[in-house]
Image (cartoon, rainbow, N blue to C red):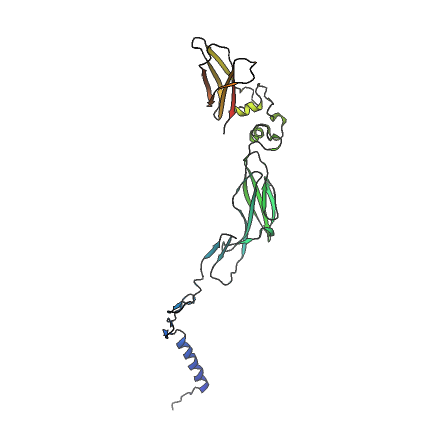
Length: 308
């Protein structure tokens, strides 16, 4: 005997409702006098529907990629309503890693996330300090001030935030040659004085002659000579030529990076020297002929001037 199972009427009602929803889940083209709705398709979040009267963008776009903003600096995943992340580190930055002596530079800080994106940290929330080098201090707002230096010097800033510590190295540039400590404004480059005499040495003064060779430090600085070597000094000779009426001056220790000004006076009683010429230096012996000597008595002076 054949048996048949009869669904209750309530079950048929539910099945009919489900089939109705299934039939309309991907509707066909719908039109009227006022609008047209395109056939539904499955994409990242919908599609565009248009008519003569309107355009509707239903898509939120693809959920991929990285978005960045220059100011304030942000790097995040785009397309997400929310973002889960883990902080993996902390980093400092600045517009330039070179700062002139006695000038300031603004520091910034950011958290580094596990996907290498970053989140900017308010500078006032960071604990700033000078780790090493030629910064005189860093303000609570992350403004670092460089010290006066006698040569280009490294300075390291440190920032602490949420238990993480980061550092950033800068170069403090020696932009003023003669402004350091006790050697400031004495006519000699601070780097030269520190190189040969160290810090705050009275023997480094411009009028001192620590090697006793007859030339003071100011002269030896401009002549690019060694202030602590009495065997290294320029020897100037004068050979007059009575028949030609001229005179040959010879400088035994010329240097590259020095301009030699040759001057003269007819009498030592004269107040000032008259310039004959300037000679651009080279390493070795330098000669100059005064063709206007004319057999007359003349006194000569050679003044070196250091050039960059």
